[in-house]
Image 1: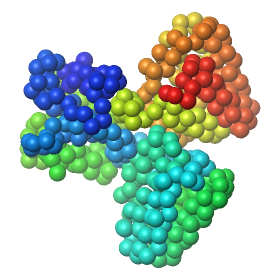
Image 2: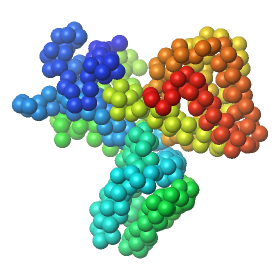
Image 3: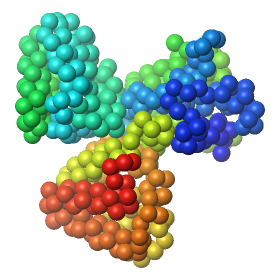
Image 4: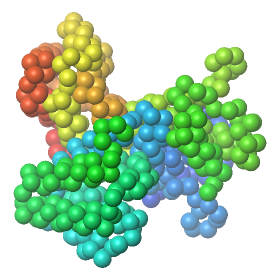
Length: 229
Length: 229
C-alpha cells in the first residue's frame, strides 16, 4: 500500500467507527504524519483526494475555521468523477440522459406531497415564471428537478441524480444554442414543470413519472441530442 | 483557483478536446509543472486525485510502462466515493439497497438476450453451482449481477450499479453471518438466479425485473437489514 493510502484507510476507519463525524476535524497534518509514520506530503495528498471526493473541506489560514473539517457532499464528488469520465468518452451523454430519465421518473412516482422539498419546488417554479435570462432559468431548472428528487427521500438517488446533472451541465448549457426559440422553449418547460408538480400534489405518481420522462426526453430531442451523443 | 486545480482543469480540457485519450500518457511531472507554471507537488496532488477518480493509472519505475496513463474506471472511483459517504453516515445502507433494486430491475427489463454479457452471466451461474465457499460464491454473485446490468447496454447504469455493490461489499459480506443456514440460502440464490436469467432469455423483461427485485429485497430481509440500516 502506498503511503497516502495508509492515511486514507486510517481516516475511513475513523469514519466507520464513528470516531470521526461530519463537522469534526482531522488532526493537524504534522500530528497525523507522526502518528501514522508517513510524510506530511502523503497526508496532504490524502486530504486532496478526500476533498475531491467531497468528504472533507480543507481549511485555510488560522483561527477557529482553520483545519480540515469532515463534510459529506457526495453529489459534487460524483459529479466531477462522472464529468471526467464523460470527457474520456467512456460514458456517452445519451446514457447519462437515459439514466436521468430512470432516476427522475422513479423519484417523481415516489415524491411525497407533504415533503418540505416539494414546497421548495413550488417556490422555484414561481421564480422561473418571471425569469427571462437563459442561464438563470437553467440554474433554477436544475434546482427544481433536484427538489423533486429530494421529495422521494432517497439520499443515494438524490446524490446520483445531482451528479448526473452536474456532469453534463456545461453540455446542457451549450445545447440551448441549438434551440430555435428560447422564449418558446422556456414557456413550454414552465408549463411542463407545473404539470409534473400538479400530478405529485394530486397523488398521481404514475402520471408524474410519465410527465417527467417526456419532459426530459422532449428537451434533449428538441435541442438535438438525438441518438448520437 | 488552487494550483493543483489548475493541473486538473488542464487535463480535463485535454480530455474533452480529444488531445488526450484513454491509453494515452500524461506529460512527465517535471514537464507539466514547467508548462503550467506550478510546483511538482501540485502536479502530483492532481495525479493522485485523478487516480482516486479512476481517470489515470500512475506509473511506477522506468521503461515502457512508466508514466501516467489515461484509463476510464468510473465504477471503482464512484464505489470508493460512495463507500466513504456511507462511512460518514450521510448515505444510509437502506437507500443503497433501494437504489440497487431500482437500477437492477431497470437493467433486467432491458437486458438483450443476444448480448455477450448474458453468455458470461450463464457461465458464472454454472461456476456458482459447484461453489460452497461463501466468499467465492459472493464474488461470483457480484459478477453475475454486473453482467446482467451490462446486458442492458447503458454504461452509466453499469458504473453506478457496480459502484453501489462496491460501496457495501464489506457490509454485505458481514451480513452472511446473520444467515441461519448459508447452504440453504446459497441454494435458494442459485435457483433465483436461474429464474432471472430464464426470464431474460425468454424475452420476458417484466418478469425478469420483478424477480430481480424480489431476489435482492429477499436477501437483505433474510440477512436482517430491515428498515434500520
